[in-house]
Image 1 (cartoon, one colour):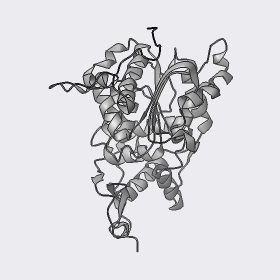
Image 2 (cartoon, helix red, strand yellow):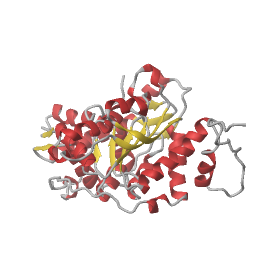
Image 3 (cartoon, helix red, strand yellow):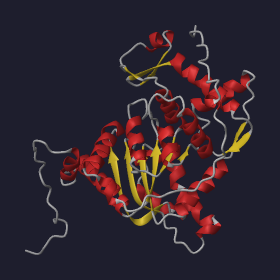
Image 4 (cartoon, helix red, strand yellow):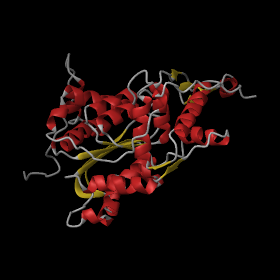
Length: 364
């Protein structure tokens, strides 16, 4: 009987083994089917990027910090499983909230939201947060930013300064604090779409006189420059949205830079995304990597994997598998970036720490 090219790799039934690590579990799942196989292969893609010394861009969307993912992102930064972080402003606001010792709380989606409003409790599906605490943080961010003085900053510079400054009053390690400490640039292309911006604007309206002006074009150029100067690049997306598109465009912006002359910018070489969205709605969060090839954002023949799964399931398993397999040792070179950031005195170390602002009255 002639060999059938479609019947080469048999599905290997998953075998339960006592004491098996998460790393070994995901390796075995790469030989089963459906999203289990996708998750197992996602680990392989991440490890391949590490082995190839790729510069790894990590896009963070969705309410991941309120959902309990902050320490995972911190761990990925500290062990350099990621090199560049692009996040929504909301995740970074919630990161500062937890870094300063505040919490998010287990709640329920089956609740009277009007009753929550009366108690000044915000709901993110089944997770609760104290609105009064958020308003205090809004005020502290605005007051801190106003004390920085007049500067034109990229979001990366602003967030690096925030990470270094808030480390002085942090209760535990946060994403921005860890990124500043370990030289991982953080970009937030939609910073205005967050409570960080709300706090700064509120301070202005109260007469604080915030003087920060954001140079977002510097972010665009600088991130593209990082891609240009890399041997190759990998992308990992949690959700989609603005972080995903900002990272995708580094490979199409890069060729416009003078330093790209003579370099072959063909798109990201490795690509991994965890999403619950589907491509047929036309939205970016669900679009396939194959589609991105048509834009020149992903390299033809790139090693890529999409996992259709809740990120609060897939990301902890992938991170634990990276730890179990000691995957950091696969990498022979960790990218280092020489990115200028002005030295601005920390108003929180001046002997006059930021005061806790008065909580706003309950909404009527």
